[in-house]
Amino acid sequence: MNLPEANKIFRKAIIKGYFEPYLLNLDFSKSNIKHPAIQDDGLMQSSLLHIFFDVDTGADYPDGDEWFIAEFLFPYNIKVPDSIKGPDYFTALSLSDGKNFWHHRELVRFKYGKSKKLEESLEFLDAKYKELHKLVEPLEKDIK
Image 1: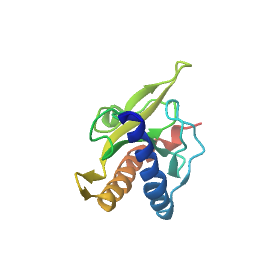
Image 2: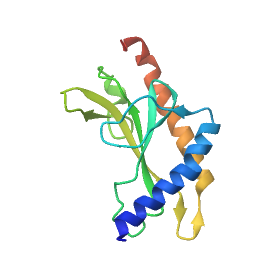
Image 3: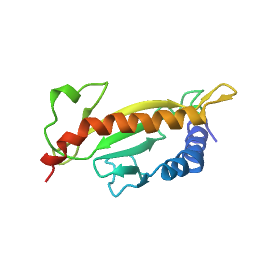
Image 4: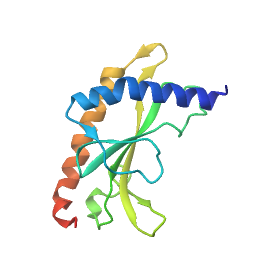
């Protein structure tokens, strides 16, 4: 087995065995939205914002078993204010039908060498979800 395959298997295992169960205990539920690029199911606390786990990006890195990318998806093709556009908040995710969803990507490092940071990573995901959700809440009125 090569490095990218091994890292993807390890990442999926840590997500399915640790992050998803804990997030489900934090009032998240399975998402009813399909991500345009990530095959696995996502999680949500509300229909406004969904979180998906990208296990492919960076899987070829030697330390790829220590982190993954969390993708926060606002799955609506609506105009968002400039104040929440940009790498700190949301960027456009182009779809094949010419529409755009809005997403934010974060590297989640759950291990530093031999030191595990699972709890800190979980707290980070929860806090980031709440922060981004607060930004998109005012847009709920524009969703049809």
